[in-house]
Image (tube, rainbow, N blue to C red; front, side, top):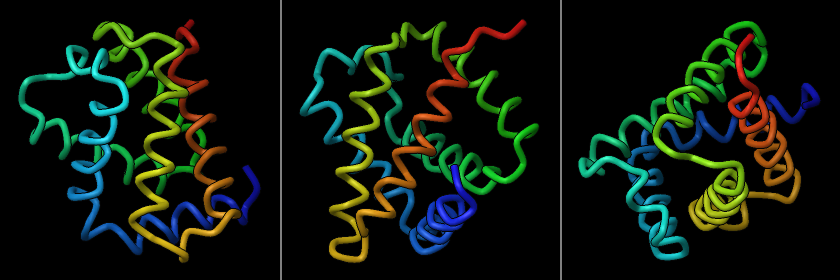
Length: 134
């Protein structure tokens, strides 16, 4: 990711921080509509899951310029997700839903450059999550 892309993701997160829980809820609603087969991968406490997702998204986005912290966070996250049954194919599906929900939340303020920055951030995190720790 370029410094401008990191700044874009972080600025976007700062703009939606107070609304992140609602956006995370919209994300899960949309994910389960598009991919109902994924519902069993998630806890029955979707409100708690929504809050965890919002907090994790904020932490990851704000640590993009701190690669050691990001690697440690994503390695642990990846281990947990593999234990939940998450597979490689799920990452692309989740990314596409997340980008669409963000675009809807921001409307015209979510530019093509913002979308590309979020896509790159997500792909970086997904790749790190899928890389087994040594």
